[in-house]
Length: 130
Image (tube, rainbow, N blue to C red; front, side, top):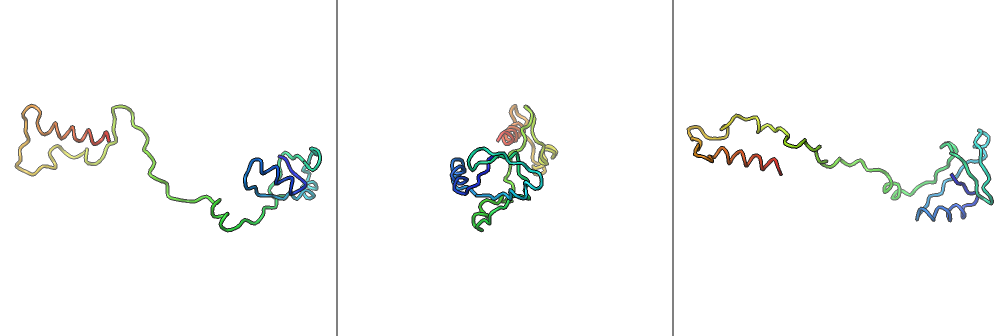
């Protein structure tokens, strides 16, 4: 990671990538005492492989910016269910009802060629396709 000794240079370099950069300060003296090494990259630039979080000073962030950047814990939206293999469908309670369970007693079911039962089955099949 690249580090700068001057604020202006750090903001200039960061502005190339981020339109509104946030400046972090590194406690370089304490980091060097703990054994972290910084490499001189010329001028006011230094390189470090990584900097532990205890040597980083984060700036205070405005409340409105903190709320905008904070992750929201919204309820997950209805995600599409996993696709079923071809020729199968998800079994629902109304599929388990016995044939003719929804019809009033005493009413007969048509049995001529393409009777009512076939139309009902087609309706159910088309509902599942939706």
